Length: 414
Image (cartoon, rainbow, N blue to C red; front, side):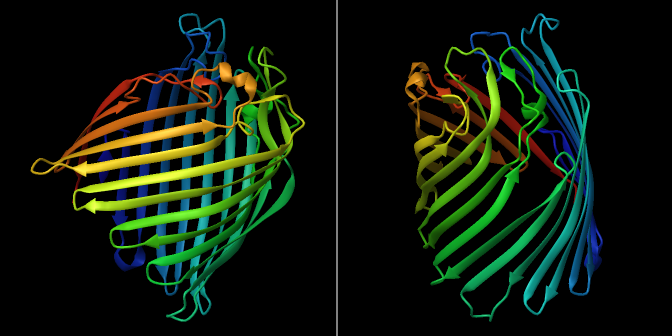
């Protein structure tokens, strides 16, 4: 049995020896926070939100000859309360209560070609909301995938599969295939490739939300995506590097937009097409047994054929350059780890957004000190050390310098 008190999660594991095991998970989280700028204009400084989430899950793993059978059932409840004016709830208040029931069955079978995986999932969603109405949605899916095993000394790894999905809102069956493969040139160097087709279903907020600042659209279509990635990993004794290029093509991309910065409401619709491509490089260097340095760079370019307003909230407002650097040092004698993280973000910013402070580009510096002793973990974090004023995607002004202290105690009953 394991309990993590910081997040109020209880997990129980029952081991059945060679026949398998059963896991029972129950958890609850609650958060209360200021929501200034999350949904409406940041000029209204008294916005407030509370979120409560409960989850219960039971999963069993059964072993039978060359087969592993994993059935699972779960229930998740989420309650979200939003107040436009914290001290005056009657002015504008949203209350959403959602319940999700899920049952799935997965099978893994060893065959002469490798490992065959198959399964089915049924997801039932219920929503009660004073703004979005009372809604129900059923999502069912069946998947099949094969991991190919070649000769023991083969340098190839290949897996492919397909997911069949039915959504009650759409009343159509959709197929989503995918493939992943890699080639191991040496024990330290590997090249990989993946291609996958996916989708995004409009949320109830996308479809039905109404407020002084936003207007949903019940005629939204699902968003479809096609992702390609090609890269190389190098893992040496003291250092490693992971570099890849990628492309993401989307049709009917869902996004909120305005015709001008002065327009009162955000409107949501399907963008005709977006084409995002870029590169991602991450490296790590083990300087000594007690110190490690890491660095990364990402570049993104977004071409879009858009039929929405001039101002995009998410899909067309992406990072263009991002640089990350980090240093982690384990102090001698005392069990304290010191970590420093630097980030540089430069956005693909339209001219009209440059009035938002720090939106186009900003530099951030964070630090974390961690003390670990047996079952106790104490950490002290300082975010935005330089007190930089900046604005993130969605035009949410971010906090200046702020601090966090946490204490964790892990109790494990053997």
